[in-house]
Structure formats: structure tokens, C-alpha cells
Length: 341
Ligand code: A2P
Image 1 (cartoon, rainbow, N blue to C red):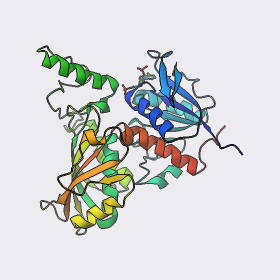
Image 2 (image 1 turned 180 degrees about the vertical axis):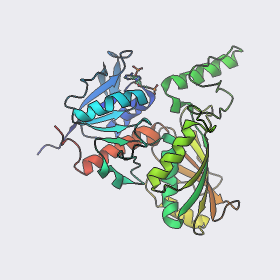
Image 3 (image 1 turned 30 degrees about the vertical axis):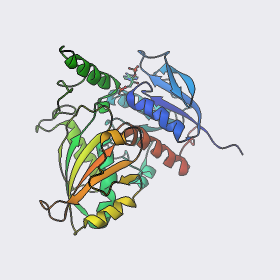
Image 4 (image 1 turned 60 degrees about the vertical axis):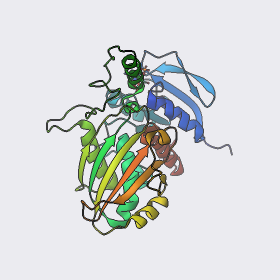
């Protein structure tokens, strides 16, 4: 019997994350029978590359999902709000990379290394978490299993790629302008990013925190299944093209030695543990590959049973596309894809 294949739509196929979704689907040999590349009217008719082939981009419309088994969305929250329910109605399972559905109680928010069982609860839509949150919970889960996570502090160093393709171009243009003594263009970021750091990602909320910081609090609690977890966050955009880093300080219920933490991280799925403190990973090391890299693991005597670590990942891959494709692979493994037509 021929192996089953699936019709897969990528919504936002011309974007920074959509491009990686196409790359990861091909690299992972996901059983794609037909690939539908969707974007706005702006790029309809252009070509994207999938598995060595050129695919014509189609404009996203209400009729785009006929016959689609799996729809991977990464074209902004407003697009997901309007079109994801239409994709489900047409018989697709949606894996949505935007924030729109993440905190809805009936939508699973899944990192396969952490809470794969949540996939079974879906009603058509599965949410892919925030990029920084994904890499943090992958690193925290094995330590939580060991000693019980009680409290966590995150300080992020997030790359331009998190704001999309045009934002990466803006960082490049700003850098070139400044090196040529010209005024840098500022459109995609709230301020100039080149040669500076911006302590604002997404919009401000009433309490003075940012939406990105709120996402890291809410989503960490939901994925780890710890609704009362105390989470303190500052999110900062740094002039790096691809790859997010997070300094994590965590407090546990029980004592946890550095050696035990390293052993747990070394044995955990999806992690590369850099045990030599001097051989720490950076965003450049993580860019273009899938694992979450953990280094600088040490005691934090400022906390009770405290540990500090430095966690780096490619935000377009494990922080977005790779995690989405892993969810799709888990759906296939559970026989939950291609059953709706
Ligand atoms: P387009 O290239 O036509 O603008 P990024 O996050 O890198 O900025 O990419 C956003 C992706 O979402 C792009 O593929 C973009 O397509 C797509 N997109 C943005 N707005 C819409 C929309 N209203 N309908 C469909 N696709 C959209």
C-alpha cells in the first residue's frame, strides 16, 4: 500500500517563518502530497521554493482550503482570526503560529517535548507558542521534573527575525545607513535597533509591561501546566538578525545541584547542553539549526534552590517552524490527520 500523503497549506509562505516552514517540511520529509503556498495579494503569482521545486504563491481567500488536510498559519493574528476557522470548516487541522488562539481554553498550546498529550484535546486548531517561550519551557521542563519549578525570571535578547522579514531588512538598512553617516530608516521597530537595544517588543499594556512579556508569563503557565507559577520577564530586542537568547534564573521546591541539572538537560529531548561554562552558545551558533542550546548552567545563590542558565535557539525554527512541523508529525503519528475529508 502506498504511504499516505497530505495536502498542506502554508499561510504566509513568503514570510520569515513561512519560508522556514517550507524548509523544515522538506528537510523532515513530511509526507506532503500537494503544497499550497498562500500569502496576500501583494505576492500572489510570485514563486517560493519547496523541496527543490518552484511553487506559485496564491492569494489567500475564503476558498483556499478545499481539500487541505493541514494548514500552517504564520501571517499575523488578524489573518488567523478570520481564516483559521474557515480552514477548520473545510476539514483541515490548523497549527497556528500567531498569538490569536493561544490562550483560548479549548485550544491546546503545544511544545512536543513538554506537553505532547495536549494535542489530543484539539477541536481543529492547535496553537504554536511564542518563540521565546518555546525555548524556555524546553529547558525548564527536565529541571521541573527533577525539582519542582516554583518561580522563574526571564531576561530576553531577541533578534530582528521575530518581527518578520521586513524587520530584518530594516536592521540591515539601518546598519548600512549609520555606517555611511546617514539617518537610519525606522518603520518596523519602535526605535532604531542598529547599535542599540530596545526594551519593547509588541505593544504596551495598561500595567506598563509589554504584550510580549505578558505572553511569556501566560504561555509558560499554560504549557507547563502550572497556573500559579511566578514569572518575571523583561523582553529586549537586540541587533541580531536570527536567534533569540534568554537568561533564565529559576527557583525550585527542592535542592538541585548543577551536576544533576546538567545530567537532566543532557538526557532531555531537543536540547544541546553546553556543560563547559566557557563554551557557551550564542545566537549565531543556534541560527539555522533546530535544538535548544543551554549553557552557563550555575547555581544562583540569590534564590532558594536557585539555578541560572543561558538558553539560545533559532526563533524561526524551534521557536516557530520546527515546533509547528513537530506538532504536525505528532498528529500523523496519532492518526489524527487526513480524517476530515
Ligand atoms: P506578503 O508577502 O504577500 O505580504 P513576515 O512575518 O516575514 O512579515 O511575513 C508575513 C507573511 O504573512 C507574508 O507571507 C505575508 O504575505 C503574509 N501576510 C500578511 N498579511 C496577509 C494577509 N492579509 N493575507 C494573507 N497573507 C498575509
